[in-house]
Image 1 (cartoon, rainbow, N blue to C red):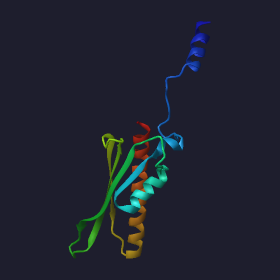
Image 2 (tube, rainbow, N blue to C red; image 1 turned 180 degrees about the vertical axis):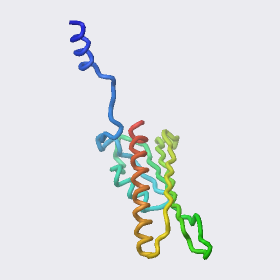
Image 3 (cartoon, rainbow, N blue to C red; image 1 turned 120 degrees about the vertical axis):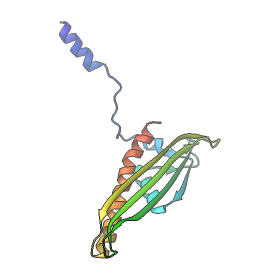
Image 4 (tube, helix red, strand yellow; image 1 turned 30 degrees about the vertical axis):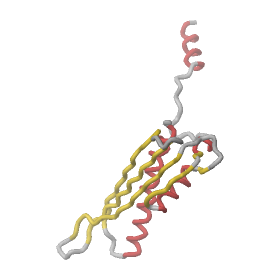
Amino acid sequence: MKKTFFILLFFISSCGYQPIYTNKPLESYEFQKIIYNGDEYINRKIINILSIKENVKSDNKNKFLISSSYRIEEISRNSKGQIELYKSTMIVNLEIKNINNKTIQNKNFSEEFTYNNKKNKFDLTEYQSSVRDNLIDQIVKDSIIFLNSK
């Protein structure tokens, strides 16, 4: 009897667990104003993936600020002076401010990836573009956790 009671109690009670990547209702990602700074492609892609909307008539009077930068660096060269390795670095800062311009939440995200040079420059630019999109996807995953924690 005690065993079935504890099993029943276990299934009825909840510990409050919620998955991190659950989609909240879209109105939770609605801000009165969205302010962009930095790389426009990265900012727009992150905003679109996260489904963040700007609504002046929103009940949420907070502002959402996104600032991003993307850099491709040459890491090493061979004895002929040709580039062998590149490193792509992306830094994104997400900030939520209230109506009085006081910061409610602020988080910096940084991702980087190192890769070899390609002989064909078209293939290299295509690969660099896919690296940039993959870095954006990694930052979006971290941003979901950031936005769901408020």
